[in-house]
Length: 235
Length: 251
Image (cartoon, rainbow over all chains, first blue to last red; front, side):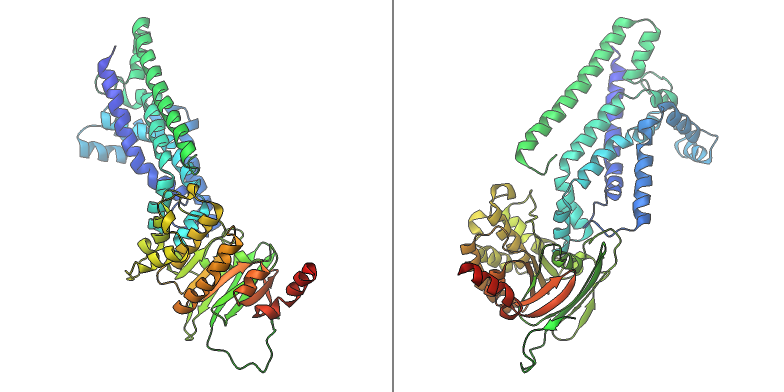
């Protein structure tokens, strides 16, 4: 068992999930037009939202190696952004833990954004409209109506982002290399173990990942079922 | 053209509020210039005639397809006119009770009724209006219940109480306010609501297709069809045909 890899994986997933919730909340709120009453939007607005939604969903369909390649190039000395990062950090972002976090955020972005978009869109429009006309500003409607009613979606987003980050392989390998204790996560550790024909170790690590993923999803669904008989607004 | 059914020799009425609304709803052009002579005005008309959409347009909500342009001007009884076309819903000084109760499911009855008071930006800081509304609609005993623990009629009372408890409102819009409320409760509420509305001097516009409700309110009735004002006047005059028809059935 590669304990260093386990610790690193959990740390990476935790930090990524926290960052994702901070980034995905305003992004999903904008895509779902979740502040104030549903607004009388123009076609240009609607188109802009659909473009953003499609861009956010890209990591779902792209090979992770494509994302990894561009991240690697972007973080490296070949681009001005990469050179700026190297100047600020003193080392390239690639092949470091913060580099992995950046890659994981992009790779897991749809898993955080989409449940939130669905949650925000699921708040009945008449609740937001009524709150607005009764005096609630856009921000107040978001904070006091949309957010509390979409609260379960935050749990879904967090769990999906966390488990997806735990399971990622391609992006981590591309931009992290395979540095023990720094960028070697559990999924890469399994790959290494198989390369070394150490099937027993690979088996143990894999079983651990299966158990971790299954228990998380079970907890999520069990909680969803409990919420369902209570509030009829909660999907 | 709107036809005034009151007799011409009637003395000019007291200064009144005016609401001018236009909006497009698919192929239907909603266009109404409402003069509010009585404290309570009832929009009367068949389903699909655009009554609710008129209220929604006044509130600044989406009507029909997105990006429909809506014009709404409110002229107060003192003659001051305010164009609200681009004013966000939250700053239109309107209290509104939608057709479905639209109670916030995560808040209890008390917090639902005090919601407009809690979120209002105006300096009004007198919470007696909340207490009054709870009393008016006999909701004190239900104050700690959530929406899912209420009957349809109870939820509707909370919806109305919340509109009546909105501080600083200059116009009260009620969409089928007695939907789901039993007759006895409604008949007990009507005179009370009329009295409160008159006391506050806030004009009330409600939507209904219930003849008896309009008669009991002694309201000014505006008959709406296909998005237009067809007739306006006291309930007994505008609804004379309906009253006759009901009388014929009863005989």
